[in-house]
Length: 151
Ligand SMILES: *[C@@H]1O[C@H](CO)[C@@H](O)[C@H](O)[C@H]1NC(C)=O
Ligand SMILES: *[C@@H]1O[C@H](CO)[C@@H](O)[C@H](O)[C@H]1NC(C)=O
Ligand SMILES: *[C@@H]1O[C@H](CO)[C@@H](O)[C@H](O)[C@H]1NC(C)=O
Image 1 (cartoon, rainbow, N blue to C red):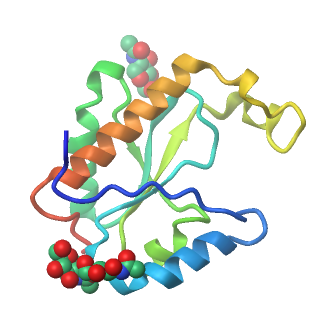
Image 2 (tube, rainbow, N blue to C red; image 1 turned 60 degrees about the vertical axis):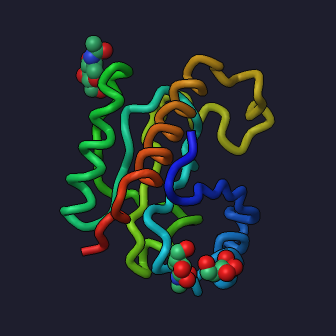
C-alpha cells in the first residue's frame, strides 16, 4: 500500500526538557508547512485506544469522523476535542490540524516516570490496536485526494 502523500515518522527528543526536539524539527521544516495535512502525536501511553483527540476546523473534524468510522470493527470511532501535544503544538498553532491518541489512562500513572516503566508492562494486544488506529488514520489521511481543510 502506497498512499499519495508521504508519511513521516518522527521520534522527537527532549520533550520533557521543553520540547527542544520538536522546536528544532519545526524550525527546520516549517518552510514546507503548506504541505502538511495532519500532525499526530502519541504521548499518553499505548493502552487500549478509545479514539483520537483532534484540533482543527469543523470541516476537518467532519472528515476525521468519517475516517474514524472505518475503525468500527474495532469499536474505536470517537473523535474528541483537544488534539494538542507538546511535540505537535508548533504546527497546530500555525494552523495545521493535529491529533493525539486517546487511550485508557487508568494505569498510565502507575508506571509513568518510574523504574517500573519498562516494555514488560506493555500489553502486546493493546499496543497492536493502538498501532492499527495510527496506521489506518495515517494511511487514509495521506491517501485522500485533498489535504485536510484548515478552515
Ligand atoms: C521542502 O519541500 C521542497 C519541495 O518539495 C523540498 O525540496 C525540500 O527538501 C523540503 N524541505 C524540507 C526541510 O523538508
Ligand atoms: C508542496 O508539494 C508540492 C508537490 O510535491 C511541491 O511541488 C511544492 O514545492 C511543495 N511546497 C512546499 C512549500 O513545500
Ligand atoms: C464500544 O465503545 C463504546 C465507547 O468507548 C463503549 O461504551 C461500548 O461499550 C463499546 N462496545 C462494545 C461492544 O465493546
